[in-house]
Structure formats: structure tokens, C-alpha cells
Image (cartoon, rainbow, N blue to C red; front, top):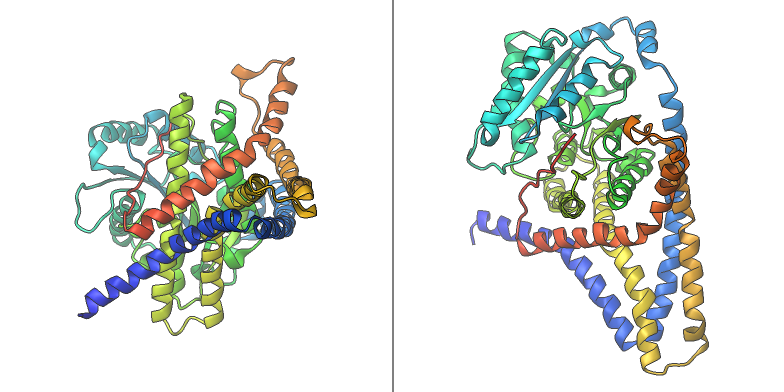
Length: 501
């Protein structure tokens, strides 16, 4: 067997491992419930105790991040930056906005936001990156955007990603990869200093906090090693939160608060969706990967491997806001929500990439390798299995024991014990529900009515009652779906989430 074929099979084994662990766990839970229900009940109680401890542990990080977030957004970073950094004007912000068929209203809203933030727009270069597959529509939009905003920003670059380039997967990664190379031509032609360009890549519907770039510049200039660091903001999905249905709101907010816990743990923090970094680092790794789905988090691993483990993600406690998947049709929104969560769960493709490349790089400290591989493996494993284990072991052993007329103190008391444990575990959910209401944007004018304001906010609080369902339907199941596809070699393409203003 030649080396190329051997490497292929070794890599395929790594791709199989996450799905194998997940399916092995789920089948074990079902099997033990059927063939030894008493042992299944013991395992259920033990797992629920573990889950309560885990939730409590995560709540501590959530609270830490929450207070950091509240403190950060109360600071006026634009005056602070101008007062404390004499060299801030030496730096240019380069902002990538990849598009794929979004309407003018979505693109225009993003540019309008960027033109009104608390920062000098003449220090900003915007790259509007279109797809050849939408060329006719995109060109019209790009012309209108350039005409409307070209005098506000330092420069608006327009790129069009060609169709059918060899070795590419059509999606955001290949679009930004092409846009990055096109932008490099402009940067080099105008003799920019690579070390004085700060890059941000956003989804096209991203609306930044007014002080995002002032805060980012402060973080970059005050960091001891900004050229080996990515900067990760908090992701809200508030652009259309009041118009969205309760299911998509809960799923979107769940993502926000999961990221909020990770911000307090930078040792396990990857880049996600919108993020910022040095142009020098981006050029060093050859831009975003153009043949995968999860390019937003892969860019961190590219840098981590390139710099022999000397790379990290720095939390930014300011938010950027994007759309939920709701576009006016409930059932279509749910379908899009499932596909979006499956796309995010496809981040499991990082596991084989990490193991493969870590094994070849002897300069990365072994402890760092172990931490990142463990965090990635445990994260995708828990995402797929934990809610289903709670469901299976919380119901099936009791059902089988009853069918078998198994009568014991354990079987009689198990339902109450499990219910008590799960109720205790939901304490953290109440805290998240309160926080999610506190951070809501103002009710849109068209929805405002003094007699219904309390009703709107009450519904936003009560909607969290469906979280146990969404945790399974839009959490575990799409994660199992993604891992199964990777295990079977049924590789996913990039699903473009529909966006509407």
C-alpha cells in the first residue's frame, strides 16, 4: 500500500471515531435499559448527578462572563481609545463581508451600521465579496452600495468568487479565500504595513456594537502578542428577534449563552462566526480554508499549527448581532434552523484535522495538544449524546422494569429521584432566561403598545419552557446527523442560511 492510500485510510479512521463514540454510547444506553433496567436506572441517576455538577460549573463561567460583558458595554471605548493611544490612527481595519444572494436591504443595513459606529470610517476598508453564481443580482447591489458609501469609507473593494474552481467547496470559506487573495493585491500595491492591518470577517447580516472597532483596537494595541491572537466577540441574534418564532429564538439564544460560557475559558475558545485577527497572521496561513464548511473556526487551528501552538483566542465582551433563521415562514424557518445547527455541528471535522496535524508537529507542547483534542472531542460528544442520554435513561429503563414487573425500592423511587435531579438541573436555565430578556433590543415601533409590553417580555421569558425539546431536536439530533455523515464519508456541503430584513 502506497503512502497516499495509507494516509487516506488513517484519516478516514479519525473521521469515524466521533460518530463511533456517539452511536456506541446511544446503543449502550438503549441496550442496558432493555437487558438490565435496574443498572440503567443507576446509570441514569449517576449521569444526572454528573450533569447537575457540569451545569453548575458552566453557570459559574456564565456569571463571570455576564459581569464582564455588562462592565464592558458601559465603557465609552471611542473616547477611551483616542485619549490613551496616540498611535491608533496608524492602524487600518479590513472588513470582509461575504455574500451569496442576500437582498440589497440586508447588505445596506450592514453598511449603514458600519457608517454610523463610534470610529473613524476613513480607517476602514470594506471588502464586499460576491459569488459568480449570483453575479447579476450581486453586481446591481454592489454598484448601489459603492455609490452610496464610497465617500464614507477609505475604500470599498468588490470581489466576485468564480464558480467551479478546482479543489474548492462552494461556500463562505472559498469566497473569503478568494477575496483574501484579491485584497492582498490591493494591500501590496498600496504598500500597507501588514502588522498595522486588523482584519474582521462578518456574516453579511452582522450588525456590530457601536464601540466594536474602538474596543477591538484597544484590545489589539494593549495585547502583549496581538499577531498570534484572534479576537472573538459575543454573538447575539437580535436583528429580527422580536419577529421570530419562540423556537428559533430559544435556539439562537442558547448559542449566545453557550458562547458566553466559553468566553470565560479562553484555553478552549475557538473562533466562531464573526471574528477578528491580524492581517499578518491571515497571510501567513494562506487565508481561510477553501474546501471545508467550518472555515470560521478552522482559521484558529491553522494559526495554532502554523505558529507551533503559540496562538490563542482572546475573548471580546462586546456583541455583534445577526439574524435568526426566521424569514416569515414558520416551517421553512424550522427547516433552516435544523440545517444551520447541522452545519455548525459539522465542526466535528476539526477532530481528525487536529489529531492528524498535531501528530506531525513536534514543536507544539504535548499538554496543549491534549487539552485542545480533549476539549474538541468532549464538546462534540456531549453535544450529540447528553440530551439523548438523559431522555433515554430517564424513561426506557423505568418502562422496561414496569413491563417486567420488576418491583423494588429503586424502581418505585426512581421517577421522583430523576425528576428532582432534572428540576435541580434546570435552575441554570431560569438564570439564562432572565439574562436573555435583559439583553433584548427595544421592541420595534410597529410592535409597541403600552398595554402589551409586559406581555411581550413575559412571553420571551416563558418561551424557555420549550428548551428541553429544542435541546434534542435542534441540538443532539443535528449533531448526531453531522457525526454520522462524517463517519460514513457522506461529506456535507455549505448550507447558506436565508436572510431577510
